[in-house]
Every structure is written in C-alpha cells, then in structure tokens.
Length: 249
Image (cartoon, rainbow, N blue to C red; front, top):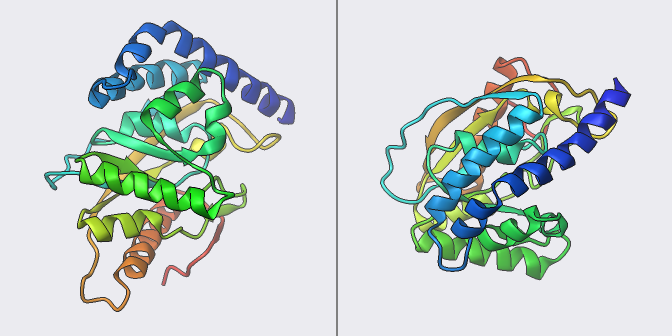
C-alpha cells in the first residue's frame, strides 16, 4: 500500500505538469493580465477534469444553485491535494482561490496561481494580513473567494481541523454568505505520503448559504462554529471519522 501511495504522489506531479502543458495556450490566454477571470475558471474546469481522470478519480460534483446575487465566500474541508481541482468542478460559482505561497514554487502551476489567485505566506503575520486585504478587495470588486478555513491539510487521523477566522471575518465584514461545501473521499484517494491512496469516485455537496447572526455577541465566531459543526456532522454522516476540534452536540 505504501508503494502505491508513493507512486500515486509522483504521478500526481507528472499529471499536473502534463495536463497544464496540453492546455497551455488556453490557460495563458485566459490568465493574461487584464483577462476575464470567468474564462480562466472555465479553462481550469477542463484542466481539472483531465487531471482528476488521469489520477484515477471520477469526479461527481453535486449541483447547487446559489440564491444570493453577488459575491460569496466558498469554504470546504481540506483533506487532500486533490481538493483544488475538485473545487474548480464543484463550485457553484467562479471563485478566486486563496492558497499557501508554497504553490508559487511549482513549475507552470505556480505561474497560473500567481496570476489568478491570492497567495498567503502563512509563516508571516504581515503576509497573512496582506492576503486578507487582497481577498477583501476581490470581494469588493464583485468576485467570490474560496478559502479552506482549516488553513491546511490536517493529519489523516483528524476529521476536521479547527477553523481559522479569516473566511468568516471576510463574510461578516462584507455582508456576504459563506457557501459551505463538503468534499468526500479525497483523503482516501490521495492522502499524505505513505498513507493509503486509491482510485475511484469523489463526491461533493453544497450544504447551503450561511449568514452571520448579527445578534450574536461575536458574529464571526458564531458563524465559524456553526459552519464547523454543520460540515463535521455532514462528513461523519457520510462515513468519515477522525478527531474534531469542537464537540458536535
């Protein structure tokens, strides 16, 4: 099993590079400075399909029609490196991703990430603050933003890491909803190095649009905790197990 995991991870990088090369003209055109991000998002969906299928993953994104007219903050559990392409396919609206600055170092992918996403240096307080300012500006410009609120991929034995406040602060201060989404099976398809990997389907489900309770003593914390319990409960109902940062009762 460990041998397959290592091979699958190496294959992950090879497939990512090869599929970007195949779609390079379309990605370069849509990601150019001044280009239309919605066009890039469509091209990225095509890349995501190609990439996941070649990884042995059959994506089965759930359908959801957003009721809110305007930008949203999309938040989902973060269990695998497969989450970004799966989110491209499953998001009910084009979103600009916020992700770790280390992604900028990846060949080709790093270039497109720099052109189209918000990089956050998690080792630097000023870097984290700047990323949130950039996300706030994108929301004000009318774009939706995707933030994985765990702030990183948790260990395999953890169901859901505690949420960072950023996504919920962004939603509260801009008076927009958090669109909460579950991504199933990804941690079993491509977990940590040496952890079990497999091929098969990956499903998603949008759990709804969550607004802050303005009457709460701390609307940001209340929204974060409510989203955490909702997401963790759904993952458990889908058969996922592991440690939690908050009680569900």
